[in-house]
Image (cartoon, rainbow, N blue to C red; front, side, top):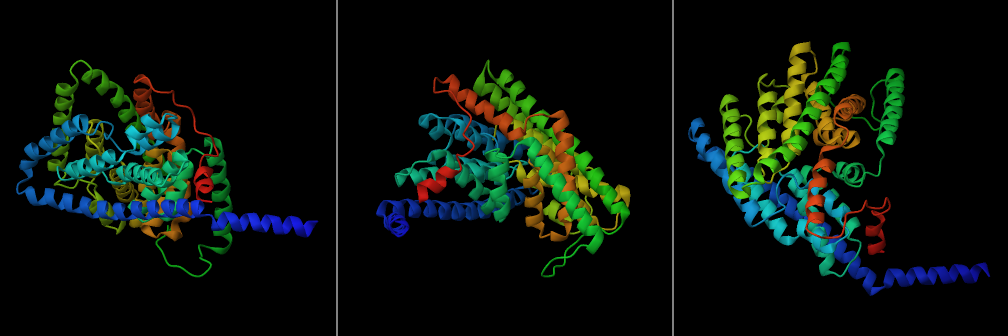
Length: 455
């Protein structure tokens, strides 16, 4: 009897694996993931060239007073006329699409046309000196590509595929595969409850500190990396967490409040006032760039990398980059927040390192990036994982975790809802207002749809 049951189960499993339909679905899914990776790499290359183009055009620092506002005006005009829904980071659109149950509404946020528009307008913004990044747009592009590829192959499980495409976008954008997985779980699907996330981090931190005190900072197979050296360096953990959390909460509040204020301002004369706002924001970004000697234009990658390598940044860099990023974000142009946020955090870490007179300057910069990024996105696990992977700083595991937890906790005290989910409500509200089916929370097990579709 048992043997018959075993052979029957084995036969059914063999039929599943040899099924042509199942293999077609797998190939479609795998092909979509590869396409996301290739497009992300090309997008990254193009983004770097766009920033180089801006620097090439900027033969005089004062030229940005005309060049940057003009780029903002062109980007916002095209976003409102040709690519509506492409504004902003792209992560709120991907989150909103997962919660919308109407296919037509979902497709408007994640379409091939939107993918093309998102890439082109993000490149236009970078070529104008806007303080934006390509990583957030890569999430929307990844979700759109995965969803579009699946539809061509006749696959279902749209919500799970959006999640998979978003994770693939983060992983490919930063070359951080673990961060892509954690981002999908913690931020996109909100599979971790707020309380659970804190409990997990506290347990890991305390156990790690106990191990650190008993046997030191070692790696099982041996590893060398920057780490905190003396007591004053550990004081910087708390300082970076608190300052980063406060600054991150302020950034969230300004963007969420700014979205409502600008919507009310634009409503009477949508196109005219949207362009007035874009021009003003572009002028603000240009002024910040002039005052910082050009350091605040674009993603801020070069400044952040210099800080991580131990070279201090000017005290004015963090506040000017903060203002430029807020202006770019509320302008209505497409562009992400990841890279500029990391640059602001690097500036905060550099300030803390100089004020405290620490020994491990580069390590403190990483703490500043972690504290501020956790305060902005309110996803502490994603924050320390992405920065650890980006910097290969495995000797900083516990300090990064602790800073992320403090930054997240401080930010959450003042801003109860995470930035991306608060902005996503605006996109869901627009679709509902258009007469489509009301958005409903996605089930906790939606991620399993990808697995079911590929079996």
